[in-house]
Length: 342
Ligand code: X2X
Image (cartoon, rainbow, N blue to C red; front, side):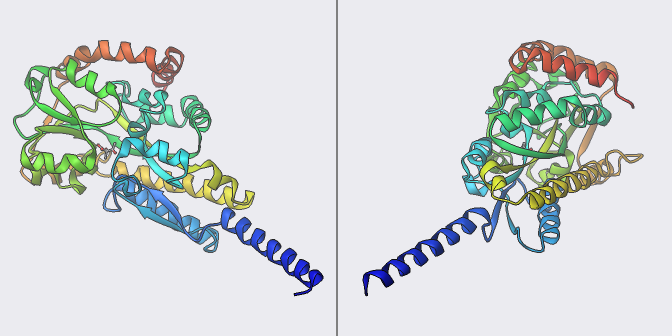
């Protein structure tokens, strides 16, 4: 090859390589969405709705594959946030509980008995606290887009009906997330043990663990009555919102128009997901609980006085963690809840 034609070839080849690298960097043929649970659960349905809306509204420019079971990080759900930040995961619908080890402010939602009803959750996520939390998440290294909901986490166990902290004494309870959960269950006299969701189910089946706490939509979809969880206590002590997020580099690789589509799709999917998550629980007579009782599960409804015993026993944990989370943020949340429209 003559020098001049070689140069021409080299320039053309370099330009081609740059173009290919550029487009590959901006748009992947497939993006990876992490979820803890699959599409049998409201949470997984929310992820599916988000992915479908994005595909439809970008005419297939953005294609997403779901990875339930946090399979991109071998089921280790409390590492999901770090993996998102590092780009091992492109996007996720994640629980505030699983990300709270890295983002201490997210422990707000896990403060025992902070949110007395659904209006209280909405007062936080849809108000000033929600905005502040998104600023925090952005600073922590991801792009937050919308809120969803896992739900109120009720107490279940294989041993006995629980109506008071005394009934919890010595029960081995599986928890996940930050040490706040260990503190809460220790304060109640239980024996908490930290475990991933993947490890928890065989542990219930074998009887290695007595109980757990999760929303009733998780209870039914995971069929926890089949692994010995025959006692439920409706205490509504904590609810975990979900957050729809995208990795920062992935986000920066999309055009502003596509970013707007992905954001709106997250908002729309989040609204639908919250409706699905609350189905059967906010309706008159709570039909979801009737279905669960029909499976031979004993459901304890606490009187206000009984519930108060749990509130009292966990109050020192609340006060301790208020400082860790940030007194200002927790106070803002308390005020927003006090001022909520019921
Ligand atoms: O592991 C749990 O308990 C679950 C499924 O609810 C979360 O991922 C927080």
